[in-house]
Length: 147
Image (cartoon, rainbow, N blue to C red; front, top):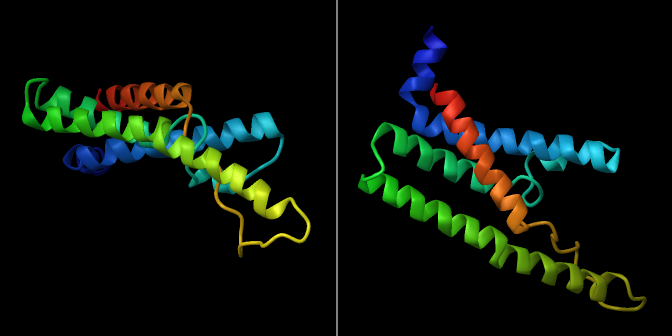
């Protein structure tokens, strides 16, 4: 009973955080199924299916819509925040990942070239499908945990 009261007291923190973790666990599981190997970086890393950022921000917006209402300032802010995060994930960060991949090939896969201390991170953005998947997950987790 105490745990349920704790969750209800801090639901605006707990629900988005639970959505983020659900997305990270799904990424980890999907990676095992597809690549047939365990990669623990998928538990905390960015990029991939589904978008944890989208899941967390949409979960927060859904929870605010349920608790406070669609016409509230809080919901408007959460919705705007979610849309900005999702746009950034599928646009700017995906482009940065593609640029990192090209730079890594230029810097690391040619003999005699200058090398950085470590390769640039390539998996930092999302495809639109991964963003939508994260948003759907956040929506679902928010409803399930709220009920």
